[in-house]
Each structure stands twice: as structure tokens, then as C-alpha cells.
Image (tube, rainbow, N blue to C red; front, top):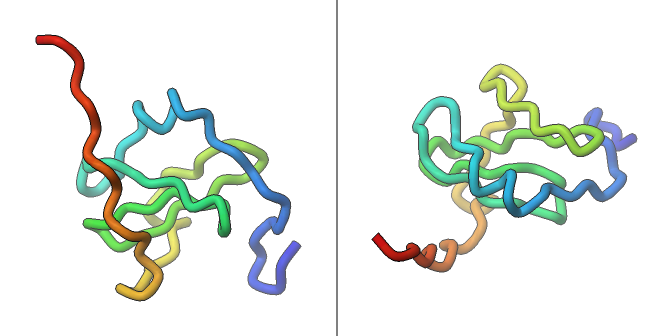
Length: 82
């Protein structure tokens, strides 16, 4: 465990789960940061931790991130047939 309380083991999030999850504050999409094992809400500028493969989607548990910490813009999602 890191000094700041984060679990340093690399966690993974199922891509299908990532498609279903949304930021509880903005209802916007989340991006996976494999380096820190967090789900990033670019709009809310919050990083939600993933512990033992379980996303902790509580704003009180999220870390505020700066513009430097925000990942580069995500590629556009492809939409299926209407």
C-alpha cells in the first residue's frame, strides 16, 4: 500500500463495466487511468479509486485532480446502428 493509502497493485476494470459507469455528479463518462488505478471524471475533475477491482463511486472517496493530472481527451465513441 502506498503512503497515501492507495493500493499499489495494478487493478483492471472490465471494459464493458467502464461503458456502463458514469460519474455520479456529472453523469458523464469516465476514463480508466491504469497507472493510478482510478476512474477519471474529466468534467468533475475527480478520480474515483478502484479497490480490489471494485470502483468506489462515492464523491467523498474521490480525489480532486488538477488540469495536469487529467488524461488526454478520450477518442470519440463509435455508436452502433440506430
